[in-house]
Length: 467
Image (tube, helix red, strand yellow):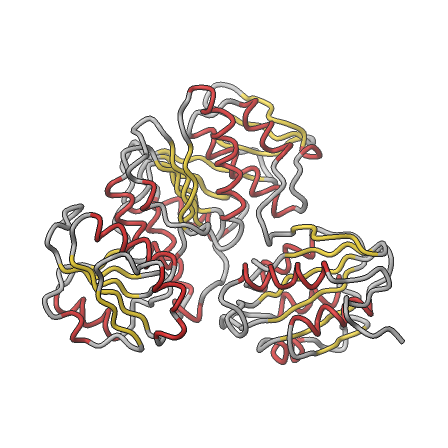
């Protein structure tokens, strides 16, 4: 039934960004669409308003099995787990299951670069997109960037031409049900993440590996050589392998030698730019840059375009983003750090004294290593949200000078403002998801930014009474 939806009855589970894009695309291709969400109508007013001009039925407050009666296809939004009762029932009935990324890859006329990993995939996707844009706009070829980075690419299909290029971020939630792979695919790294969803590392790794599974011998796979999880997938590569490394010379691939980023092809080496000219801060962002160069190289982007993007690309919102400097204190938004490993990467990016804000909802991930690094690198720790008690319990006698536990992000910012001194970095790098208090990490980051913008020179917030 690939690509043919005329007259078909399609059930879309989950009415968020992906679900809305799916419904609009399918109705536009003359399918009969039913959307369903576990949340009640009053919580979905904004989403339903975006579907108001379509002829779709909505079943809210649950996913009754009767939705499957007469269904030809079930489409999952990323937030719907594959072990949900209705998904298991669809499988038992033999009803095909798909998602927006699968449909996009089935229909996309242009080459696709796909990027996944436990950390860094959004920054890498955006940077690859910028490298490609700088190179291809001269030839009047358009570069399209999307996927898990924040927007479904289904609405773009009507405009994408065969000589364009697509750069697409793919999550484990999307990949676990997909049976298509991009022609150029990257696994940046593989560390524990989303175990509340996947339950085991084996299942999580299997989902990530699907980005390589359906490539042919003409495909190109890019793997992180320094990461044991990504490197372990080399035996799954069906096409040509490219590597990137900050520690060792790799061939063919991208590496660092004597402070310079190099591309090594089969018969030559080419210098890209010095490491100290890369604008993104931190060792993890150097790896993201190396990965981006390797992917751009696979797409035949010129070295000057890679170098210009590496020198000028300032990053993505909510990823080690400098919000403001107040009274000599730099405030950084790293709200996208929803796993302990991401918090650790952020801590390694700074040499200044750190006031760290950690909080949110745990994803059943180990905190012991992160807690040890917090004790080593953080002067003052402010805990908030559901994960606060768990992190506090992981701290032993070797701990930050000050540990404060508060109820929410606003109180956390107020506490950090009291603790910070000129020359410090205040870092929101939560290590947990936002779902205990916010719709997503972006909403949490936006709230943090707004709170920081309210800070006055003396560290108090606008509207606070100053004694």
